[in-house]
Amino acid sequence: MSTDIEGLQAAVERTAEAVKTGNFAQLMSDVTPEAIAQLMQMAPAGAGQLSITSMPAISGYDITELPMQGEAHVFEVAFHSAIGRATLAGSWKEILGQWKVTGVRLVGIEPAEPAAS
Image (cartoon, rainbow, N blue to C red; front, side):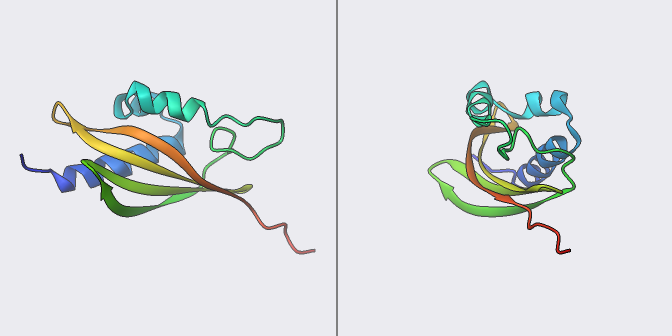
């Protein structure tokens, strides 16, 4: 079985861009139902908490490839906004010839530093 690494990298970039721009149709195409359930569990427990599901206007992201875990390719994506940074790790597998996010976990949330006055 050959692995389409260029296709994988393009899929990771496409999915990160879909998160940034709020392209839910693309996200639904790229993410398995299991990974969507994991994302839904990341909703904030209390009002005013910074979370990946409550970040306004994502301004950018950084992608870092991590070592494989079993058969899954793993990438960390740090999403940036005016209120902070949220980093997710996603597991990717090729399913029926398409790269899909099969698992996701929160790596960390970092509120933005207050502006100096």
